[in-house]
Image 1 (cartoon, rainbow, N blue to C red):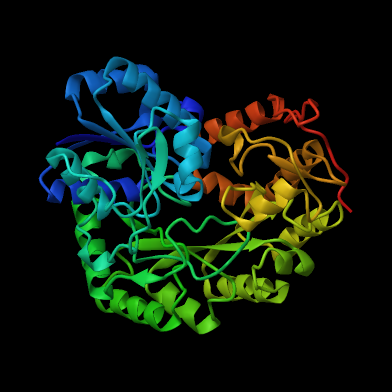
Image 2: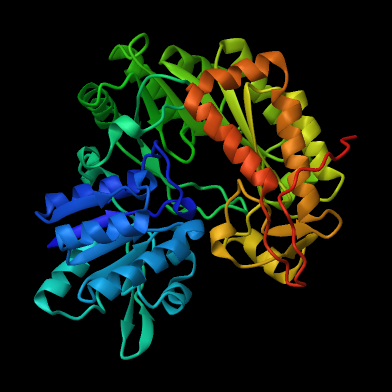
Amino acid sequence: MKILLLEPAEGLRYSNFAIPQLGLAYLAARLLEARHEVRVFHAALARDPRKELLAEVDAFQPEVVGFSAPTSKVMTAGDLAADIKQTAPHVKTIVGGWHVTALPRETLASFPAFDFGFVGEAEDYILTLLGALQNGDGLEDVPGLVWRRDGEIAANPPGKPTDLQTLPRPAWHLFPMDRFAPMYRAHGRDYPMMSGRGCPFRCSFCQRVTGAVVRTRDINDVVDELFAGTERWQADGVQFLDETFTVNAHRTNALCELLIERGVPGRLIWNCTSRVDTISREMLAVMKRAGCRVILLGMESGNQHVLEGVCKNTTLQQGLSAVRWCREIGLLTDVSFVLGLPRDNRHTVRETVAFSRRLDPDFVSYFSFVPFPGTEGGRLAEEGRENLRLLHRDWSRYQPQLSPTCELLDFSARRLVALRYRAYLRFYLRPRKFFNLLAMFRPRSMLRVFARLVGDLAGRGPRSERGKRYPNKFHFVRLR
């Protein structure tokens, strides 16, 4: 069958760089392995995504179009699916990703242009669906499928998590590898890959898309792909996209020792994501020797009561120790914080900003809390608990970089936005931090970052249920 895959762009904005879509790359590889004809449409690189997508559909004549849609992109995906149905009503449309996994029936009910949805990982069971469609078989036995039956929406029981050892290598030849921006540097090329999936931690604000069961690949296979991928695509860096790269200390050490044995240090650099409670000074030293350059740590809050409320199960002291160890060893740190979490208030959000400066990582990110559907944090916001007030359910605004989708009862969305931008300015408008930031971007990319910032500051935010506007205007908030 002819299959077209895509992930919509955020707000249909044009960009001249792309973000690696590892899930689509694996899905495309699985379909190619089964001898289907596959193309990938790169919406983020399209100047007019709707027009160019419809032109691609007309030229390729796919029988199936598959959308990967996190919550913030599901509305755009639904609109694009409707456009496709208008011009090619015979095309079957499938949606997968974060949103439909959390709200399977509601997603198909809200977006009638989607014929099917998949809950969880789809690499194995999309082949079952395609076989059933080709043979005219029933769909009751397709694991994880959400579908329309006799005017009703049916949801089949979920399937087993994907066995990572059975996956083919990602089909990166269908992607614009030269348009993937490297992480934490202005020049070079990174090869995106994963060594494992799943997260056993239960942070209440996280969707945990790949599930709670941690599955890992054989470390020899990981290193083989690392060398094959970087050689084929002429990359001098690697992005490990595991949710928590260091979740298993023994395996992390073994993988790093293998990287050292195979001669990675001096040839390639790599970065990864971790937690402050899954690393030690000894582990970080081995990672540094193995070629690790940057580690991203999710600290989330600078208040212990808030950390406990979101089930982060980490401590402020663990954060201080982790960043200090990295600094002593020579690893760069990028630490993320979330403003407006459950239990936050006008005092704790300021504590978080103050703690980020005390922590003093090389890079910092301040995100707005997003009450994603299917999470405990989302439920608390819906119920108006833990000092939260939900402002709207405009899924396109459910992005941590935008104005908040909920606010604190004692600290409005407008003030949260102002605090966030003030925090960025106070952190980066210091000589050493500013030069760190400059080193991350090419000049044109830096201009885009500032243009986006100015656009956010001048933009208008969503309406609350009371009809009041919450603009993204910049207001100086005094930090105590």
